[in-house]
Every structure is written in C-alpha cells, then in structure tokens.
Image (cartoon, rainbow, N blue to C red; front, side, top):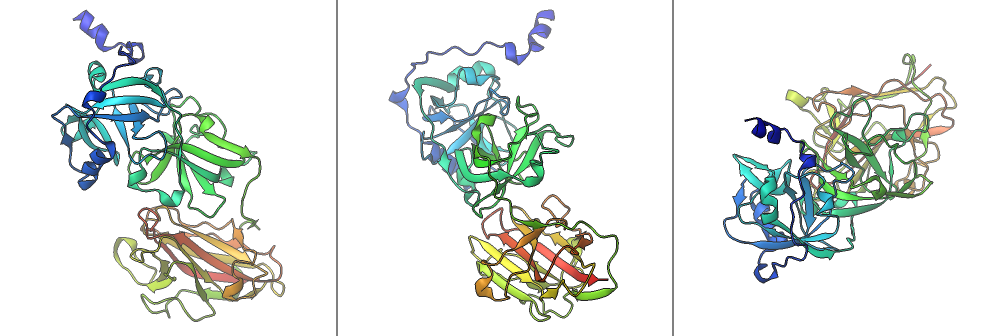
Length: 458
C-alpha cells in the first residue's frame, strides 16, 4: 500500500519520457488523412467518434509546452506549410517538448482513440462518458510515434476576419497589429497574464493597423512569461488559433513570447479627443434624440441624422424589444445578421454643432449589446468634415476616448451610460459619429444598440 501511495503521489514531471525509436517508420500502413478525420467531426461536433481499427496519420507538431503556455495538449497540423487541418491531442504528459518538439513529424495511430470536442475545438484522446480525456502515459508510445524529420514550420498568414472553425488548431501569423493602447501605457503597462484579475488566463486585446478586426491573445497564468510586460510597438503575432476555455470567442495562444515579433517601435493609434468627464449636464440642449419618432425596423432618418453605410448593406435601424434585452422604449441598433456581408461598417452622425459659440459642451448617451462578439462600436468627432458622404473618409475623425461603450463582457440585457463626456476642449464646428464595425460572419455578427443621446452646453 505504501508503494502504491508513493507512486500515485509522484509529480508527473518526474515521469520518464516514453522511449521510442526516433526512426520508427509506419509508412507501410499510413491510410488516414487529418482533414478527412476532421470532416467527420464537423458533421456533428457533439458526437464522439471512437476508432476501432488501425488508422495511421502523419502530422507536424506546432505547439510547445516549454514555456508553460500549453499543458497536456499537443497540437498538430497536417502540413508544414499552408496547412488544411489541425487537432489537439490530449495526453497525460508534461514537458513533451523534449520528445515531441516543435516541427517534429509524428505518426498517430488512431485505434482506441476518440475524437470529440474539447472547449469547442476538435481533440483526440480517450473517451470518458461525454468527455475527451488525456491518453494515459503508458499508452502514448502506442498512439504517437515520432519520425526523424523536424520540419521548418511556416505559419499560415491570415487576418482576424478569417477566423473560423476550419482554421482552429493551426499555427498562424497575423501581421500589422499592436496591443491596445491602454495595455501598454508606459506608466502602468500590463503583463501577459499577471494582473490582479487574471485568474486562469490573461486575455489581452490586439488591434489591427490595417482596419482588420481586433482579437484576443490568451496567456496562461502558469506560463513562464506571464509576468513579462507587453511590448509597446507593432508587428506580427504567431501562434495557435483556438477557442477560449468557455468556448465564447476565438483566441491565439503563443508557444513563447518570441512569437510576438514587434519589430517596429511605431504605433498606429487613432487620434483622440479627451477633455475628461464633467460633473453635471449643462442647462442648454444643443441636440437630443430618444428615437421615439423613428419607425421600427426602418433606417434612422430625420432630425439631421446622417445614416451612412461605408461597407456592407445594413444601416442603423430603429427597433422596439421587450424581455431580457429590452429597448429603452424605442432605440436604434446596428445588426448585420442575415445580410451576407463579409464586412459591415455603418455610421450614424449627428447634425453639425458649433463649439465656438457655446461653452461647457457635454455629450451623454447609452449603449447595450445583444452579445457584441467580435464586433465593436466607436464614438468619434470631426471638425473638418464637410457633411458629404463623398468626403467621409478623407476627413479627420478622432475618438472620444472618455466615453464608455458597452463591451462584449458586459451583461447583454443592461444599458450602460457613456458618462458625462466633456467636449469643452473642442474648437470649431463639428459632428459626432457612432460607428459600428462587424460582419455577418460567425463571431463578428454582434449587435450594438444606442439611445438617449444628449449634447448640452452651459
């Protein structure tokens, strides 16, 4: 009994790496294709498929647990460049990088393994009820054999707008990106995963310098580099595209911090106007709208509004809803679902206001989401736009960074106040714009809702 107890409590890090012949060749019975295997998975992701025959497939290792950002999950893909399919292999083995190192070509015997979903992505392992669990240590040599080839892996170049199930578990690269400005403030920079609210993973917003969608970089709080500060410049990020633990959104996991290749010290932050917050609204109303006069499911019109579709086909529309996500009487929203648009950018712009003839101008509004997902909304101001659609993009639009806008992690049924956004530092005549960016593609087809807009002055 004592011997059994001691064996059961031994740290897994002390287990010997399973010994295999690195030159083992199973090519004579290679008869499986990873892309075809995943085809079975996507026919019914909720079903667990168990293999009862010798099926051998080849793949390349694209994950590494050397830096601690992967734990008992080996990620492989079918090709060393331009891959079509990738999968997680759940195995009861730590420090696997010493044996199944990055780029190592492996041969996988599927007999006795099961294919199913693990946190929303396809995974191989052993079935236990409705779960895919780790391959036992003693069975790893039977199921995974390394070959003598260690390939140079070329990351697949994609954009965040390309994120989809068919790219899950692939080693990808996204260029021309940077971490959100608030995360890289020199006075209080964020780390990869050691902030006070980082319970399991640090989730950091990555923005595009080319107009692509933002995305989340996730880092385990157990990673060796969790306390490193985020780099301030811009460049590319490469890693494994997967889903977060709760299967809420796509995310990237790094093998090491070296995969963040920010070679430029320059950033592409949009210009912003930030006069701070005010303590109370002014007595004079320059503009207000609660949208009660609008018609449901029709584009917002009248009262001087300019409703401009920059990309896609969907404008801002009025709506009324009750229930868990009720409108504020009648509100307006931007919702690309059902449009077929691969990109939706729509502007709702107030009438022009003169900031020179007034003092103490203040903006206030409310926003809500019906699950924002990967879509987002911004509030901007321009004092050089001439009011024509043709010159919309040639004008300088600056973000009103003091305004709070509902986020994807805010409760979808609540409405959130922007706060009293001080505009007293703005000079000239200007327009205030609410700009939505999204898509009808899965994950980016979120909804933003807007109401109770007021601009006051002293």
